[in-house]
Length: 273
Length: 223
Image 1 (cartoon, each protein chain N blue to C red):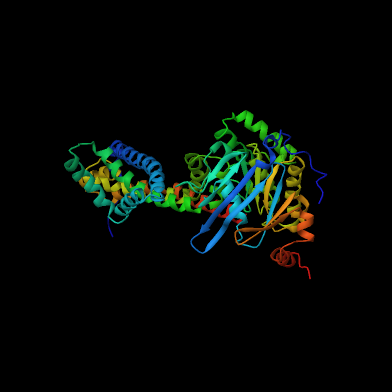
Image 2: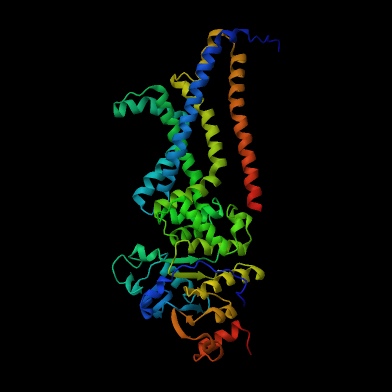
């Protein structure tokens, strides 16, 4: 995988590094279930440093996407706590809580989804400037200028006034990444962002993510693409049945997994004998 | 049939017809504004997670859907003044009856539009930090409107035609004026044919526009 042809993605200072690295994200005893039978986060403990690029792998229903959705505030937890940048972020034990308590912290998380989520009634520019104007209070001129600069760095400057229906799948996902970056997040979440793409478009999206990696952006990535996972991750986490079965450096986890469950999964997805 | 058509008698009544037409247009236009605005609000209520908002909203819709428009108009004209001891001018009362009827039907059109907005778009708008009212205004409404426009416009045309029912309670609209002229001149065939022609001429371009819009949307979806 090469990221050489990529111009730099937003060269903003990485505030995430300001936090004491081991405290960037801490999940403690996090519990989440859908109904009584489907437990997707089973008293989960997980730590992430500010310079980590965490790739989460595992079978379907293992709670990978749920973790991202919880971090984004799209779903609540029923137990445990999550700290973000050293501050309490989500408290599943508090009554009626389980979602982000701090809106400011929540806006420092950006997320890109599997399905195209660009708003079809807005142009690329409209998609990019909506949140900066409405959430961060930027003027239209400031937001447009920022959008233009960001798109130029992603090689999409000619698409500023184009509508999403006129973009290819890969371009849509790159614009979706740009839209999330407009808010200068300190943590980016990628939920199977290349799963719905044709192979040649997968590369262009992965290249953008590698660009971000080069700039030490903190990321949590859920993917089924093991080669990409190995390439981009600083740490790979294997989840099954809502628990972290094993985690480690990609080279170790992909070549010498310690747990039989991990080995079994990797044999299946990598078609190893 | 050896009926002799004679339209000459209408010459002296053009002023009256014009006044009636203005009232009809006023009724249709204001009812549509009421229906478009309140319809979206009512639609949001029917989609609320709280039953004490959802149920009354649904009841409102069912009331207007399950009773004849003519009865609604008559009820508003005779019962509202009795119940609330208010006396409103006939045109406003007509707008109220027609507007609320349209609100109920438009709420259903909007609801289909809102439900057609992919759930991922809502997730994305949360991820972008938009507040609930911002999500509604900037993400849901424009998309719902786009889907609902053909039905909203069809509802709009039908309220233009149903506005003729207010003639029964003596609002001086096009139908009422026509009825008066036909009775005075003993020329119902010419008068009612002309009135029908005017309603037709008003509605046809809008109906054609709706068809064009629908074709355009089909093409856009197929892309």
